[in-house]
Image: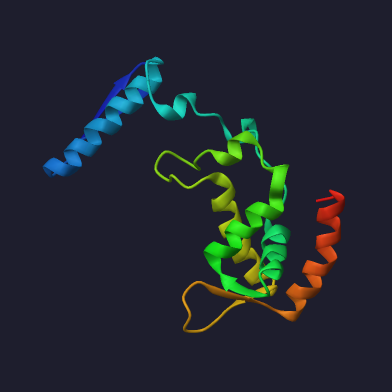
Length: 160
């Protein structure tokens, strides 16, 4: 059922639905949240959480660090071991907000999350490939080996 009411230059539309109790609870929370934000009385984590540009994080590409870490591990290793080794390669480049969780729902530190995606990027760039039938196992390709040699020097000089 739709009711339309005209007030001045505004049109107010009311829509009525029959909702299950679960959907009603979610809708009620959503309405309260929106009302709180509209009136400036919302007390939520996202109101105090820094925006993306305000974070003090390492803003460069993590892919070279992931490829060099895999090279350090002999060219073949499990995803978790690669990420842990890449943390050592990153060294002091990580900033305070990199050590904090990505979000309240994901308790993974930002650096670990970004390195996981860097491994995926490295796979798309043909530096790394998966081993079929082996869960989590990654192998460095010849292109990846050349890339690791080239980038390792830049990392050691502090250019990356």
